[in-house]
Amino acid sequence: MLANLNDVLKPAQAGKYAVGLFNTTDSDMLEAAIGAAEELRAPIIIGTAEVLLPYGELKLIAPGLVAAAKRASVPVVVHYDHGLTFECTMEALKLGFSSVMFDASAKPHDQNLAETAEVVRIAHAFGATVEGEIGHVGEAAKGDESLADMYTTPEEADEFIRATGVDALAVAIGSAHGVYKKKPMLNVKRLMEIRAKVDAPLVLHGGSGLSDDDFRNTIREGIAKVNVFTDLCLAGDAAMAEGLEKKLGYLETRNLRVAKIKEAVMTKMKVFGCAGKA
Image 1: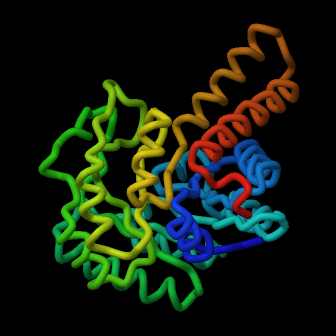
Image 2: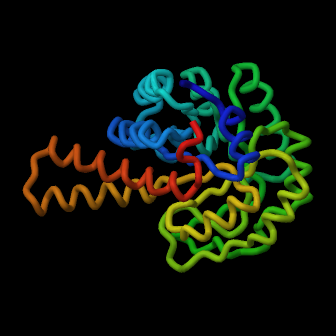
Image 3: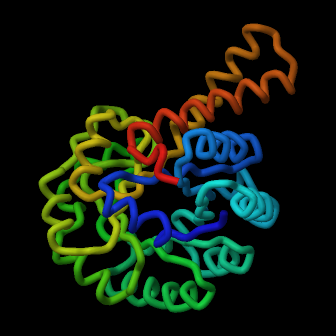
């Protein structure tokens, strides 16, 4: 069933578990993610990000994402991740996405507030939810996840939520997008300080490569949504390598890829504690 962030994150926050966002740029990843959610009876968030559009055109994949969510037997949020432009974010809403993340975190502070507030106003009119970001979630390839001066502060988080009306907030506490070059050091103390200051569900980006303890510790202290994509790609890479080694055909390799990505999604869901919550 098609849901939005409020439908799945508010129960997660109350129950001290997290719901995963698994970006799904093609039908293989979509089938794997929905299959994992239904098998484990877990709520799930699927979607794509603006930086991933070269690998899956929005107008092409949106109908499949929305249709899969509507026919699923568990709550499925169709989420547009890291919307960097107003135009593409609006397109996602028009195509039926039930949630969007508008990411103006790299822009000047006042501009981030004003632009995010405008997206919230419009998205709420669509019945969709909005995630925003304050602080800087690093890029693992650049090694900038440990720049403490870019971490979200409790005061920034509180001001951002009050000024924009976002339904969920991505915070910077030391995680990064992509493959980590070194072991990330998450600032759980900072997360606790933010959680004590704000009520909105908090989001951890850069979930691929974190340890199970990292997930459990951050979820225990207030994270309700975790973003995962790179780990799914790595599972797909492993399937293709195995297919080549075993000289499997295209369709056999495709099925192997779906199976391995599904397994990766299920592994994360069990760690996040959302299995059996749908």
